Amino acid sequence: MRLLRSLLFVIWLYASMAVIGIGLWPLVVFDERHVWTALRTWGHATVWGLRWIVGAKVRFEGLEHVPTGGALIAMKHQSMLDTIAPAIFLPRPVYVYKKELGATPVLGAYVKRNQIAVDRGGYATALKSIVRGARVAVAKGGQVLIFPEGTRQELDAPPDYKPGIAAMYKDLNLPVTPVALNTGLIWKPRGLMRNPGEVTFKVLPPIPPGLPRDEFMRELERVIETESQALLPPDKRRAQP
Image 1 (spheres, rainbow, N blue to C red):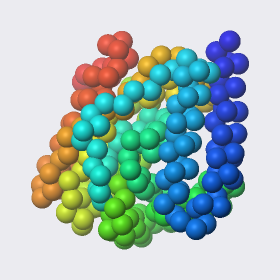
Image 2 (cartoon, one colour; image 1 turned 45 degrees about the vertical axis):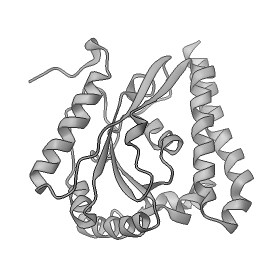
Image 3 (cartoon, rainbow, N blue to C red; image 1 turned 45 degrees about the horizontal axis):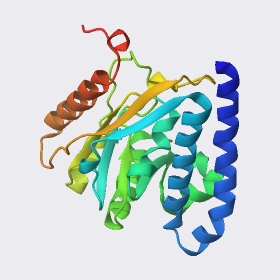
């Protein structure tokens, strides 16, 4: 039964993306702000599918900490859900995406409108392009969403925070709003299966600008990892060294 529910959900996930993407595209052509309308609609459709097909409920906490204007958001990354659900609670999320994704059907047409493309040919070049894109996005009131670990992590994986977020933090001189989560409980980094249960996105108080690089990175990792681990049941928490 779990396999059948998982298969049905995957069909729902991509079918809803296609229907919403194609249906709202005429609006996006005339006004790029409707990119967020489409992303938010798909986010709600995905959460609905998880609830009624898989039996998994998604909760959002700490919404009082969500910035309304240009901002930097640093989020734990455990599943594909982390790239979809933020559009529900962020007014104008701006994602950093691989340049190749712009060639994919439906989704590619959207991300090329007002998201940040990066060519991962070289670290220095990629970082410079991300910082430039973040400046533009923040100036337009977007919330630039960064996954500091770069890729999806298993629940018990040790933290692996990359320094790219520190470069953006210094360049833009803005607070960074951390987001903890436990989405890996219902949606693994890889594979087809989805699990019933309940998961949470928890928006945390912002880290103020101006901290030295090393201090900022330590604090970012500390708050995100502490809160993300606290959202897990005791038997799923990472063993302490």
